[in-house]
Image 1 (tube, rainbow, N blue to C red):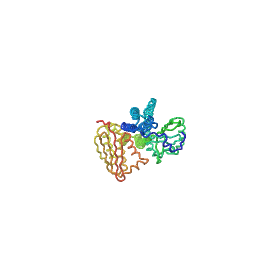
Image 2 (cartoon, one colour; image 1 turned 180 degrees about the horizontal axis):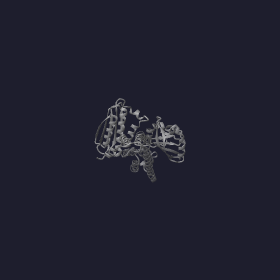
Image 3 (cartoon, helix red, strand yellow; image 1 turned 90 degrees about the vertical axis):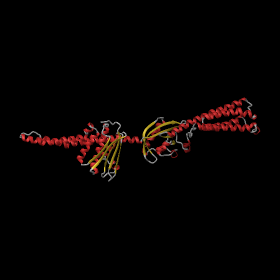
Length: 473
């Protein structure tokens, strides 16, 4: 459609009626008003002396015209059924009350009666059709306004002549601000406007558009939307564009978060591999090298020398076994798979206190049974990471760990009264893999995690996880 210069024609252009008749009571009210109008006209003609209405000035056609006005008003406000009923009453009143009682209105030609009835019937049919179309247009109007996505109707030059309330909510422009303006100037970012020409060409060829794009709000903020555009043929053969926009910003953010999570998981995996390789090389490898040299063959070795070497090798082997057990425990504690969450945590706390000197006050309720393996692993790793952070940064001699079940939920809490920190600043740091890892583990299982801390006020980490798959040990 060519651009329309008349702004008033844009706002009032292909506008649909405001609303349809509002049910039975409304239609009945309009019907009664129509009956009252017909009765008023009938009694006015019958009761007034006939000499006041000279025969040349009034006749069946005049009375029919008055009835028709009433019928049209009823059709406009009350709908098809009410107008049809009033039409029948008007025809009955004209032929059985007005004409027999008023000699000046008697039909001199039988064709006049036929013409009058045909006139009223035609009026009834036309007004009924108009009422039906009005109701249908009002329904379409309501669907346009109440649609869950932002809708806009415009010409091929993107000049708007209608938007709905969801468009106002998403993009911030009221209908008064949008009508008559080009959509490209309102919501399309400047660096993306060069693509509008290709869209216009495709729409002019009758093609349908569907694409995920970035658009701009009135306040300058941007959002991701799913845009669907379809050409619509208007009366007269002109082409308009019906565009729909669905806000998918949250979905795109979730996709980006999942992508970032996948990248970070690979980074964590590589970090763990590097750590394992370093442990094997620096600790296990060096010990094995020393053991190999100690037990290596020697031509001048006597029995006493060999015995002495074996005695020296024994503590080295014991130390090597301890290192391997510790490394295996760090990778995956066997107690977690064989005995369950509670025994694995008790072993963790014992080992943690022995290594760091930090006492663990463990309080638990309802966790003696077995849980789903992913849940047990997540809880174990979150507590392990929280205790590691406490030993590194809190500067305390004791930490409290609480674990309990309630209403199908598994709750955990790790609390210390150490130096504390600012969670918002720490979580934005590039090397905050520990806290982010805890949050991601809980999130992947459908749970929630909160971190309450401030400088000098200690730290409390609380998590809640669904535990519907609990089994009794």
